[in-house]
Length: 85
Image (cartoon, rainbow, N blue to C red):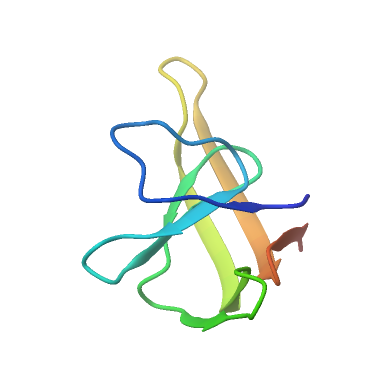
C-alpha cells in the first residue's frame, strides 16, 4: 500500500497508510488496517521526496472500533510504502 505523509492531524483526521511528524518531533503512522502506531522506538529516515523509512519493523495491536475485537498489524514502512510481514 502506498502511504501518504500528512501534516500533523487535528483530532482523528487521518486515514490508513498516513504518517506524520508531530510538533514534539515524534513520528506516528496509521497502519493499512487502521491502527495507530507510535514510531518513537524506531529509527526514521526521511528521504528527499518526503517519504520515510521506519526500522525495525512496525508491530502494533489494539482496538479499531467498539465491538470489532482486537486487531494487529506487523510489517514495514519503506520509502512511504507499507508491506505486511
